Amino acid sequence: MKMSYRVGGLLAAIVCLTNPVFAKDAGTAAASASTKESTKDSAQARALDSAMTPGEGQKRLAAMIGTFNVAIRTWVDPSQPPIESSATSVGAWVLGERYVQMMLAGDLQGQPFNGIGYIGFDNVGKQYQSTWMDSGSTGMTWYKGGFDASGKSATMKGSVPDALTGKPTPVELRVKMNDDGGHVTELWGHGLGKKMFKMMELRYTRSK
Image (cartoon, rainbow, N blue to C red; front, side, top):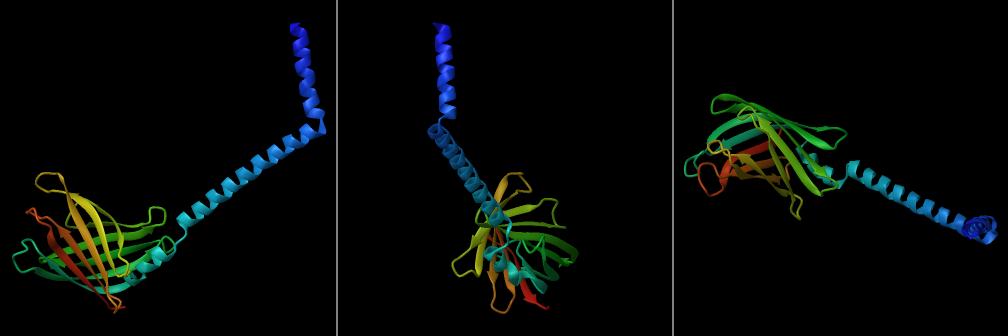
């Protein structure tokens, strides 16, 4: 009896494979699966292309490209007058106009001061990202945020370790684009107090 069941099962399988109706259904199922896989591959390709292609988010940073004279004001104590200094900054596209590189050189409180920063727009995360490093520190600061509806003001948030405690403290980078092609960058933080205040202002005036 067991042998009969096995033979019967084998015959049924052969009938299914050789019957035109069953063969047609099998072919249709295979074609459908292939179409779904092709659609999935196309969607992935479009998503990857969108993720890597510069667009409107990057174009908004074009105002930062060029050579600028920078007037720097620094506050150690918000109740006291700021310390004033100057620098030159060069902004340039890098990696196929995906990011802006900012190279700053000048003086701060009578000492040479140099900084390097990058800013770009993440097409997938839909937000701006920036990093900054300079000769006044050994740590890099990372910021994330976006522009307001006007497209001329941006607020980006990050954190830095407190020099005394080592604990992370929030900082904000506030950027304002001017109609004359320049821009103003403000660094806000807590300093030695609990209330956030403007610690540094960099006013960029286009020279080239």
